[in-house]
Length: 261
Image (cartoon, rainbow, N blue to C red):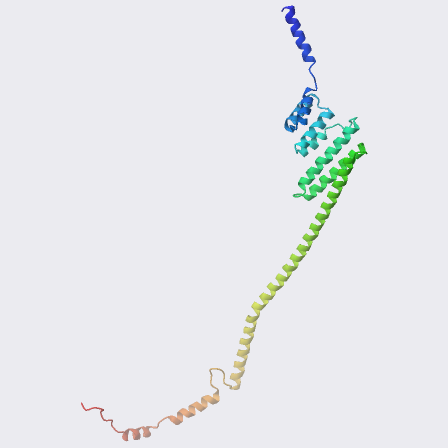
């Protein structure tokens, strides 16, 4: 290999050695500033491959994910920032952004799972307190803390009112069920009552018939003993004796034909 070729190889090696190690991170920041958050997040992840312990890269990635609306991923990225970070300003911003992400997650869960929302709001308040501890003059952290605190109180009150209303509705439903049960019982008793009355009437009729038979009284559809005896006497009086039948036949005339044949 000629001396000129060796010089070219050496120059190339030196050029590679002078490559900017922060070029990917700078490209990610440029994309973030342009509002291209998807590509910016990808570049920050590439930069973290070479610098996995960089607090700044984890913070920037978390901020980018927050801008994308990926609040859970944002919290996970921000929590990767080492707790031993020597920059108190960045520590405050990390806690502040975690508080914002927790609030957004709670806000999204409020309609479907209010209890989970309360838990997320409580975590947001804790993050804001850490931010105020690291930066006591941070007015934004103080404002957000007061805002979420009121939001949490309103949600608690709403849940208590809903619980009270549910209890009242349940009590009213129980009363209605009891009233319906009473009405059903009364209806069953009314259905049973006519049968009992009919049995009583039948027993009374049987007793009356037995008493009337013993006393010789007339029952419906029956003759008393006195009526039966009187009827027999009347029949005897109306009977025709044989001698009267003969007399009637002897004195009877023969009917003439109505026309002459």
